[in-house]
Image (cartoon, rainbow, N blue to C red; front, side, top):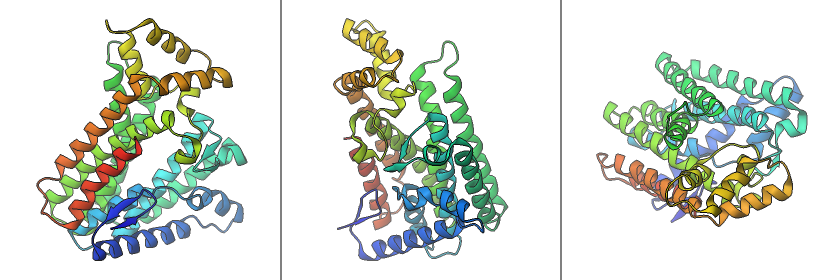
Length: 337
């Protein structure tokens, strides 16, 4: 059994391991090539997060999905590069919106060079992704455009909050389906499509990616509360400090507003609703949420979406790639503890 990729997927088949490793290495080269500019400063800023590493979850999924066709088809690696570049671009923008100081264990671009440079660097990455995408054909452009629309819509919905009468948890799940699930779904779709897999297989891997993407984001929500900065690569409780209600917070509010809610639940909600830019209040809120059953409920939600993703794979033929995709569900759940 060999661990493949920074996310730590276990692969039991030597041929599959070799294919995936070769694909990921080619993606890494493609990312560095795509982020080069004639202007040295742009290259430095654009490669800042590429060189910081990362899980490369989306390229990994694309490589595994490509196993259901010809994994060496010339469009597979460029498509994976497009998806990862798009993801990296959103991180530059997210860190500006969140005023984040750390990303992947290094200073965020906005902390190092300011918001303007971070936003423009994200735009530069989007442009490079589009340039590569144009060579993959009009259908690929259309798929990416639709996913990007969903991604931005998810971000806007998060910013706007749920409309009156809407269940906040349902609203949030819609948000992350757009913000995270849409692009991970494209990774599965592109990998299968570019490898020449049949339409049924492409659709299955698209649905799998969407559901796994939701589980992946829910695991991140849990990590933001439960992990230290070494594990997550960013400051713990960042979402709390910025007042972003992720699933553990929403589950807490849900409980506090129910007949089973206690005075302690409501007190913690009041603390979370206050000003958490104060380090002492932030630490108190983080400790309270770490000890609360709402965090375990969020973990159970993560498991449920990962299991939904696994079930989606059932119609696919039995093979080592399918086994690896099933184990990827376990890997995502493991991240959430």
